[in-house]
Image (cartoon, rainbow, N blue to C red; front, side):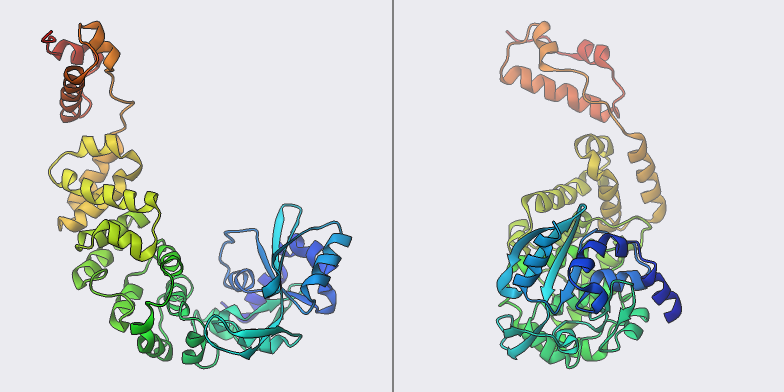
Length: 402
């Protein structure tokens, strides 16, 4: 797309109207406050907005932001005053307003900063050139570092020296790869890759929560195979998590024509041999995330052994993911996958038609015998592809022993 088209899109952005109350009370027309970061970048790229939240940068100090907002009857929350951040809410729209900052001393994430009024210095504190783009209240672009070209070319480039940007916060290694996949069409900057490789052995200092948050977001994107390969080559992902076989399986998974799921990708990583508990701890995955991955992985064996109806019954929300992952693990061809996807599509049971109460009416008493018979009948029903109705199943019930 041309720069003219991108700039016209920015001027016509719908979110400018949502941001007007904030611009009005914070001197947006005078250039005191500008939108910054993701909402500007994604508008220029024509990407759909996934949130109504707006990031604003301002020359105003936090206390003045609070006072102006309150005078304009806008709710203000001091969510990060020590970092210069105030959260404002108006008309159901949230704006995170941060005062411009500049470094006094830099030592990783704990750099000493002070509030400033220099937009270029604020821009140089950011990570990538495509994230140092600002827009005023009228949607006019302010580009102090010349990042528009990189943004439109989908080049994810560190601002200035890549080693210096990473030294300020090593999580930027993971952010680089995530952005290369989400915004860079999996194009990679040689300088950035070399800088990431130089610190790969020193990333253990990062918290598992921060790393896991980046990895979960990365694993949720549509196309990441090349990105994972570069992360492996750089040493950012070790062989315990990303063996060559696991990488090849993940590449195969995203080539199947179905939208890859986080649970499917995590299941393929588990299939590489890492224990679920270790993976959960490494990336601080939630119980829901790791349990879904474990269920998908374990169910793949059932599908490969022909127990499709049982999988569709017990894990309906994951049945298509399971079929796709099973095809990868079982090295099945496209025809096999198409057949099993079609089966999964048709297998939509209302629920097992027999209950414990039904067996009580046949003379069973609550207890192990009733439970065993109920389980046996359920197995028969599943093996028949839900082919027996309630009457047929009760006719198949064995008489109670007592």
